Amino acid sequence: MIARDILKDLVAINTIADKCNREFMDYLEDFYRKLDFSVDRMTNEKTGKQVLIASYGDDPAIGFLGHSDTVDITEGWTTDPHVLTDKGDGMLYGLGSCDMKGGTACFMAAIANTDLKSLNKGIRCYHTYDEEIMFEGVWDLVHAGTKFPPHVVVAEPTDFKPAVGSKGLLEIIFPFRGTTTHSSTPIEGRSSNKNAVRFLNKMMDFELELRKHPSDFFGIPYPTMNIGIIKGGTSINKVPAETVVYLDFRICDSEREYPIIRKFIDDALEGVDASYEIINDIPSFVNRSALVKVYEEKTGTPGAPFFGITEGSFFEGDRIIIGPGPVTAHEANEHVSIKSLEDTQKLYEEMIELLCR
Image (cartoon, rainbow, N blue to C red; front, side, top):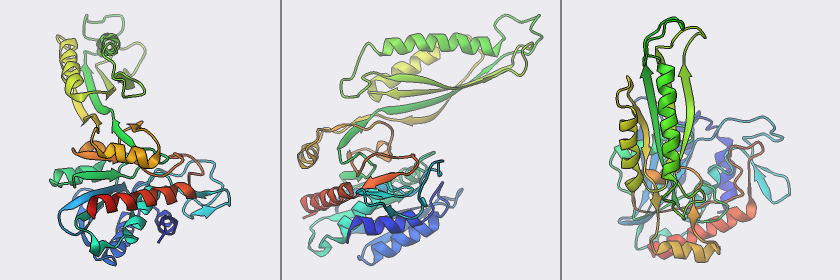
């Protein structure tokens, strides 16, 4: 079995925002049961969406993780996004072919090509939903107390380069409160907009302070802060009573930097009618295990950080992010190279042999 055959089937299922989540999981369940895997499907009570866990054998030594959802179709597609298309240029075109049905197809094909009965250790496969927006699928696994194998491959597209860590993410909402008056009769300290601006000025100075302790592992070697959203005021001549600010921090070392950020925020808000809510707190990680060297040798590429957040950031342990390429995620005419699919499938087969036999 080869990955492109499975990828053709996966691309044909419309999982934009998990539209056909159940159909996708039905396909996976049928695939794994034919290989004598046991299959568990976990349903989110609020959304009705499902994650699927496929298990073979006891004492799993390796796990594979892939999300089922894709982004929406952008303008500029020249082929049917839900038909895997070979134009003869060495690439396969289709929505999700890169992000991340390509990687999923690779580990499914690798498992199908393995003599499972001869293995001494087991395998686990995790298929999630809602990775592109809120990570609800992997949260379902974490909240259920899922125990992951000691080594997990997150099959995100990396162009066959091992990603061995990623920055942490801290997302915070700040509501500032004030008192509405006419702009000609303001009350000192009661403009929610002015208080928000004063706070943001402090935070921007603080961001520069955070740069004084760089982390050479990451491409941008220091924490960054983004002011994503500012909402405040309804009229040019009214003092606003409410302003909401959304901040996004990308953190190099969560253990060291997180408490520093929290303390500065608390100090910066002292005396101001404001509060805050942390809506995402995902820790940073760097994998320094011996297996990193194995991936580096097999790919001929040194381990490097992943550019964003993956589901690998939601659980602890030995994690490698590696999948096919080129990385064309979220682009019109999204595609993956046939050679990269073949190389990735072979790598996964070798890692199963190494860790399970």
